[in-house]
Length: 164
Image (cartoon, rainbow, N blue to C red; front, side, top):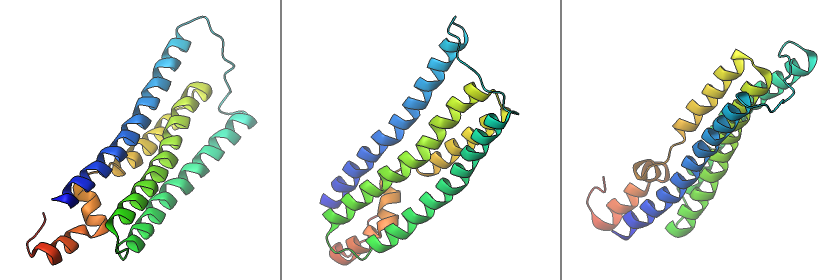
């Protein structure tokens, strides 16, 4: 049951980062809400202007590259981690890689929410929603960690019974 405790600990620490990203997103939305209904004047950018189009394009390119790349690279990295013999090293490397994946996709979500306010563009709402959905697919769980690192196979070898 030592493996179960280690997996739960890693899962909880990754969950802290996951929910912190959503908390920062909600905080950005609340700040934007108060800025909208207060006397603070923030220069808004016309989404059809050259600057607005450039910002939108750069953000879309960031999303189109970062989401698939982070998901694919994380998958390849976990495939390499399966052959790591030391489970402590395996879980720590997995945790660091999961943090990076979450922050890359989470940054896209937070920037998208801010751009909704700055650009007043409906397309920014949809692109921020795409980032939120991608972040949802990165939600960690103990079962997911066990499957991705093939830890259930190690447990079978040791105990002779199925872990899950």
